[in-house]
Amino acid sequence: MARPQKIRLGDLLITEGLLTDEQLKLSLEEQKRSGRKLGRIFVESGYVTEDAISNALARQLRAPFMDLRQYSPAPDLVKLLPESQARRHRALVLGEFSGLLRIGMSDPTDLQAYDDIARIVRRDIEVAVVSESQLLAALDRVYRHTDEIAGLAKELTSEMEDIPLEFGELLGLSNNAEDAPVVKLLHMVFEEALRTRASDIHIEPQEDCLRIRFRIDGILHVQTEADAKISSAVALRLKLMSGLDISEKRLPQDGRFNIKLRNSSVDIRISTLPTQYGESVVMRLLAQDQTLLSLDKMNIPPKVLDRLRHALHRPSGMVLVTGPTGSGKTTTLYAALNELNSPEKKIITVEDPVEYRLPGLNQVQVHEKIDLTFGKVLRTVLRQDPDIVLVGEMRDQETAEIGMRAAMTGHLVLSTLHTNDAITTPIRLLDMGTPRYMVALSVHMVLAQRLVRTICENCKEARNPEPNEHEWLRYELGEKVDQFTYYHGKGCAHCNNTGYSGRTGVYEFLEMTDELVEATNQDDPVAFMTAARRQMAGETLRRDAVRQVLKARTTIEEAMRISNQNEE
Image 1 (tube, rainbow, N blue to C red):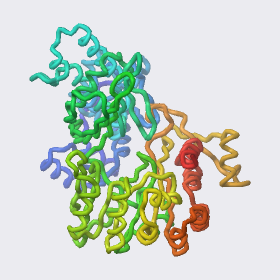
Image 2 (cartoon, rainbow, N blue to C red):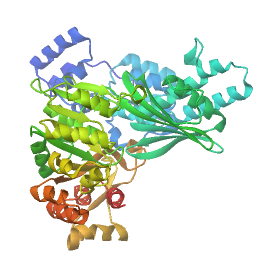
Image 3 (cartoon, helix red, strand yellow):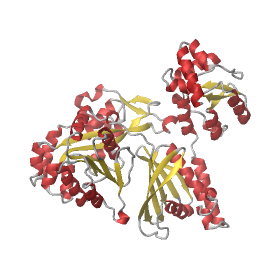
Image 4 (cartoon, rainbow, N blue to C red):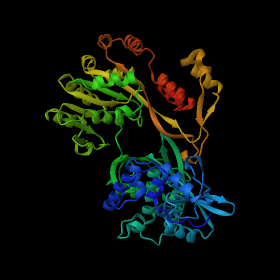
């Protein structure tokens, strides 16, 4: 294809019947005020979709329109255009066709970008039209920094072996901290973790290597393996960043720090643990600008959501959300707080750490080192005349008892607990030493939840269940098991060949009815569990997971994974 010609986008869309003269006039006025691109204004104003603009440009230029959700660019050719230039020009090398290098561009009428790209790749090129949102997502997928991380790790190893460098320079303690090898390595690790939507970074010294893993959608993936010699330098730099004691290597330490990456502010919670081959470091990434979900968008079954809202709008009592670490408990509670938040209510949270920022709330960070404990803060909180109190976790008898007294004296208390399911939660509270009458009178509802990975929409395909999966489904579906179609993701560039993209929740709930309150007051756990199962009527985590399978949201394998976890 020859060099594109300049096109007046507004005129083209009017000709195509996609835009009105009035809409173009308003958009041009907005462009003059804001300086933003005209096409972006059309989309954000709701006048026309990205795909409609891209298809119109493709027709006008007689160029192909490429759906990047269904296409995997060639990795060796992608690198012909450096990432910085690809992002600057909103372009991506897609492949080779008929001797020409095909470049996907969101704005193929940008002639300066076209000329710059041709000069950089030094090849004859042709343009394909792609939508901007798909392009930006593709850039995040294809410009992975695995090789760069491995290269920086080797550079750090070399520096430590040669040691002409001051140790302070190696760790970034000098004026040129940004150029220190370990600083560059960690910066790249953090950037890649943010790019891949990792929730945690695990840095683990092994006998013969330092392994770096990311937890993505709840599953750990090895990012790189470096020379074991650098593990002490990496751990030391992270301890410096989080204000930990760098001389203490025999005891675990916890800390936190904040970094800015890709225009985002990220809180990082760090935990160190002495192991046989050095200090293992695990970091939880908490993006401060992450958007809170509403309860309506959390895939909570209608019946469960109705009962949850009923409990949340009571003036007092306790609502508990349970599940293992990383099951989305805090997200659910903050979605509830977001719904309850109003000028008429005073809401105080006591957390370690504060994971979300929500305007209008009074949020308190627990600090064990200065004896600012959950119990101490809670006692003071109750003198602050709150209507609603969120306690980050019921982690001991003292916290549980203070929270329950608050629930019994006119406050709505929300909290989390680490239990396998809803039924065992009241029993767990009793095991902590909490008096029976407190549990019976204060707890109104227990919501148990898990997160399952969702099937990638770009590579979803039908498949037949394995024999063991078939039998597992039969437990819930009976003879209807063969009446449904089951899906999985075969793996593609969009999902990093995992077959999954994102996660969704599965839920069960236990409401403390009069029968269960009476059973709680009796010293008979078996009778309580029998009554609780009768009240739940089979509406378990397992059953909700099967529903997600039948809706083609997740795989049988994922549903079995979280159900088996629950049954352990």
